[in-house]
Image (cartoon, rainbow, N blue to C red):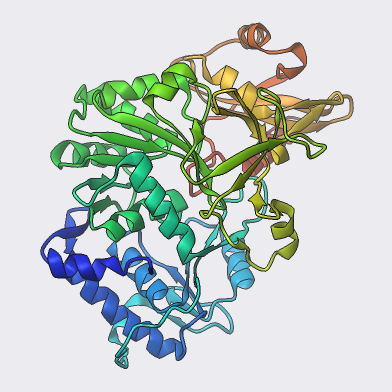
Length: 489
């Protein structure tokens, strides 16, 4: 089965059912199917033989984005979404890396054919009499990691990996065609793209928005029969701020599916004020892994710090540094085996070899599993800080500091230091009108952490830089702080 092929079936059975809502505009399944068919012809005409060709596109976060993605994938070409928020250097790097056969959007790049969306529509296309016959599992998507610590890497996906993921999501989250789903984040982020494509694949209705605005999303949730909401924790913090002002909860929402980062307990408790009747699911995964584990409400009450248990069809093993399987409660590196995995990194065989170990894949996450199968993450291998010869996982320190109500956001980094090797520094954004002295912060850390894990310095930052996936851009924070310190000396 090909992703999105079921749209034609839904269009035939329920032609006037709304497929996509975006900022007060709607598209029915009949219109969506017609738009996809038209774009398939236009793109195939430009490419000639489309199979395996790479098509990059830079479009707004709206219906055109999804229509273009589906049209590309249904002619067995490979879709490469680009992000307007990327810096020019990153965009140049990505286009050089993926070397697309065609660019759709207002973008010119040397030696690559490009067409604006308007020109593509106006172009005289030839008729596709039949859809491509799939003889094997085709590649359909290259996404680029957010690059929180380095250059973005292109992760390659085959059709079957997401088809299997859709099936698992249906089972775990009980998602049906009758659901109305809201995914108000950037579609270049795999969490929201996955949510939208899954909704259309099963014949549900998907709400998207050109730009995330907490007030607008809150109003959309209040005034529409949305049953399922996809988000990342930082988005819900923004929604909670709206709730604090309005005092209007969203009572009809049935499920919330969160990913992208661990949802800290204090923020999750606030969320229940906004969505008092919704069942909350946190899932752990990665662009390379898809779904790995899910923490439901029952699991949260018993194991609040975990990321849940592996979903059906997914095997997880924790391995020590010597490669042997870790015992229950013993920290090691997570390895995942399933039909949901990615195919490898584009043009980076060495990086692919680094994460693939036979049928198992690791993205360097470190953690442990208890006797009941619940997984707890302690950090990521590449984020580990070595200070005074001791290994420190910044995520552990961040979790302790995040529990303070005065702290809005925090990231812990290691800065080069002649004495410590790397000096542990906590970069903090305070809640409005609040503040704690360094002495109070150190006291709190020492109460919860070994002394060597306590930051040696605390620095305030008014606003954090974020990646497309709404994660704090760790590498950019380090540069900002280094520049800030240099300016003082």
